[in-house]
Image 1 (cartoon, helix red, strand yellow):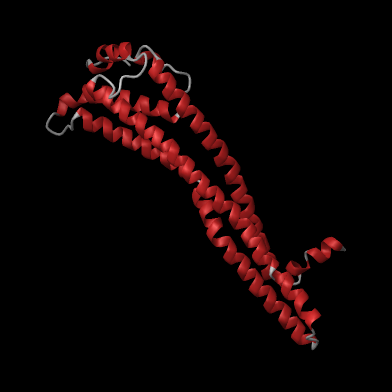
Image 2 (cartoon, one colour; image 1 turned 45 degrees about the horizontal axis):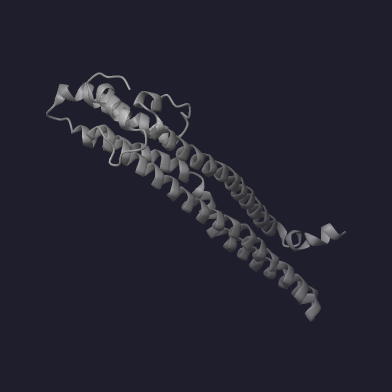
Amino acid sequence: MESTSGLAFITEGGVVSVIVALILLTMSVLSWYFVVVKSWQVFKHKRQVSEYVRQFWRKSTLQEAMQETQHHSPAYKLAQTAVESTQHHQQYAAQSLGAACSQDEFIARQLRRTLSQEQAGLESGLSVLASVGSVAPFVGLFGTVWGIYHALTAIGQSGVATIDKVAGPVGEALIMTAIGLAVAIPAVLAYNAFIKANRGIMAELESFAQDLHTLLTTGAPLMIKPGSKSNVRELHTRVVNKGGNP
C-alpha cells in the first residue's frame, strides 16, 4: 500500500504524467551512464598522457620513444603523427615543390588535426549531460503543471474543495519539479567537472605537440629535457635525413 500511494502522484496524473516520469528516468540513466564512462576516460587519459610524456623525454633516442608500449595514449598518437608527417613531407614534397607547403607548416597542420580529433573524443557524450542539465528541470516543471491541473480538475468534479483535499494532490504534483532538479543537478556538476578536466588534458597535449613541432623542425626542443641530448642527435640521423626511419 505504501509503495502504491507513493507513486499515486504519477499514476493519478494519467498517461502524460507517466510519460514525463519515464522521460526523467531515461535522462537520469543516461546522465549517470556518461558520468561513469567519462570519469574513467578522464582518469585514463590523464594518467596515459602524463606517463607517456614523462617517458618520452627520458628515452635516449626517438626510436626508443616511439617503441613505448602505450600506443593508446593520445600523446603517443601526437608523436606518431609528428614523425609520420615529417617523413611524408620529406618523401613527397620534392615531387611538387610549387604546390607544397613548408615542412614546418605541414607538421603543424597534422598536429592540429590530431589534437582536434582527441578533443572531439574527450567531448563526446558531454552534449548529453548538457542537454539533461538544461532540459530536465523544465520536464519536471511540466509534470508539476500537468499534475496540478489534473488534481484541480478532479477536485472540481468531486465538488469538495477543502484545504486537505487540495493540498495533498497539489503537493504531490510538486514532487515532479523536485525530481527534475534531482536529475539535472548531477548532470550539470558532472558537465562542468569534465569540461575543466578536459581543458587540463588538452593543455598538456598542446604543450607536448608544440615541443614535438619544435623538435622535428629545428632538431632540438625549445627547452632541453633531462636525458634528451642523445635524442636530439638521433633525431638528425633518423628523421631529418630523407627516407630515414623513426
